Structures are given as C-alpha cells and as structure tokens.
Length: 159
Image (cartoon, rainbow, N blue to C red):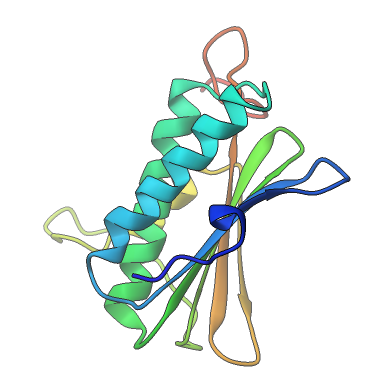
C-alpha cells in the first residue's frame, strides 16, 4: 500500500503533462487506494488546472483503474504500479504487474460469474494496449475526459 513520494505522487511538467503514480504492495486493499488516487488526480486536474473532466470520465476512470488493479492483484504476485497521465484530452491509465502472461478475454458465457474486467475495460476505453516488459507487463487504457454535446465520450459515435 505504498504510494510514490514526490509531490504526493502527482506532478506537472514544463510541457504541461500532468501525471500521478503510485506503487502498491499487491494486497487487495490497494484496489481502493488506486481508485482514490485516480479520483483525487482527476479532481485536481479539473480544479487546479481547469481541464474539463466529465462525470462519465471520472466514473469510467475509477472503473478501469479498479478492474486493471484487481486483475494485477489477482493474477500477479508482488507489487503493482499505477500510472495516470493526461494527454490529448484523455487520461491514460497504465498498470504494471510482475506476471508476463498477457490477459485474454474469456469466451462469452452468460452463465459465467466474474472474469468480465477486460471486457468492461475494452467497452469503455477509447484505446487499449498490453506490452510485455523486461519483467512483467503493462496494461494501458485511455479514457476521454470530456463528452461531446450529445453526452457521448469524446472520440466515439453513438450507436
């Protein structure tokens, strides 16, 4: 449950990149801590830096952070690192864990209980990628901060 030090894990760089990160011990309690970091970060992005953050963006960011960190805690031993970055009108959510196995979507099964986190993440994200790292992997999802005038996430069209 350790959070990165240095400006409370948040910093603004000279090129206007806003970011926050934290390292966690991988205990289940870190899932709530990660959601709290994401909420605080987006609240600061909006309040102190004046960037628009819709209620949808806040809720979807909390959901995706929860799903990605939950998967890391459940399937990878050891620490988890959460990185949040504002870029191009979106929040980029990256979660690193020590397991090199890439996540996969379970086959559709209406009787299945659980294992829907990746499906949820893909459904609400504007972008998604997984990268193997020298140790473990990094899973990244992107959530648009503002909605278009019809209330749809920016960059997506209504069905």
